[in-house]
Length: 323
Ligand code: ADP
Image (tube, rainbow, N blue to C red; front, side):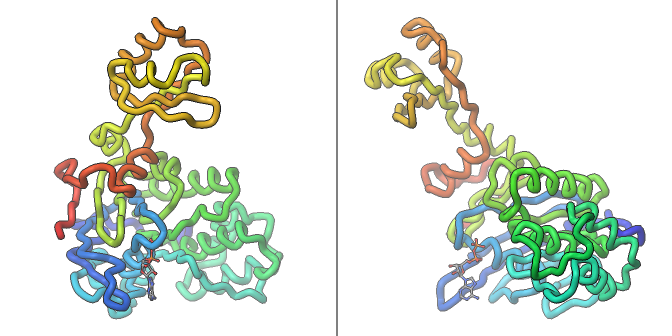
């Protein structure tokens, strides 16, 4: 964002290297033996159900929490204890980002920018980029939830950091706000920044991330490119057939159909042999009104987090944590 932004460092080594990190609360591991590299210039998504350990892991990477065991290196240096050399290189938006609530939007961001010695032009540019260009004079305590979220993101970006951590940045944004933020994030990536973010929006992770890691109960189940994950896991295609067109038993007996359920006004046929099942359906009932839903990252995610598939290494760059 800032015209004085440091040039991204494309030096050797990953932006973040996490090795065997464990963190427990009351004897219960929140993060369990996680090993993970985030590459420089990468857009990395950390996914998982509530309580899976995402925030804990991200905050350990940021140097805000201390791991019980294992190591973290950010640009080759430990972020813990507080490492002032790393602070200008990192931008952090957490779930509980702090605000100067009695200040206006512009004053707040100017104050944050001043902490980093960043000039005023970066403040205007950053507010514009996150869609708060018209809100300069609004007091922070009068902002809506979505606007506060934008300001928290602006506060993480204003000093032009190389490595940006965002914890559910689109959680309280409306659909237009989400799409706008996607463009901001894509722009940052295009300028060589590294982005680590958490989200519950699987469509968003699929659209934005170079790689995603899925945490389940503190363990990293998989790390992979979204499209590769979808292909390798062979999630089923769903064919939606209007109810009444074919009986459930008959549909289940079609060669290639692996499951049949009723959802809404449709019989949903799951298959990994889409062409064959479509041909059989065509012969049986015709294809009028039949809809095809190709597998998405969400399907794979739901399979993995529900433990319906074995968590085996899927590719050379995957990480699998052993018990
Ligand atoms: P996520 O971000 O995936 O929702 P969290 O990292 O917030 O998961 O939490 C992981 C687990 O650690 C949860 O069971 C949560 O209750 C627990 N936990 C997180 N922070 C603390 C804390 N400060 N004290 C005690 N337990 C915590």
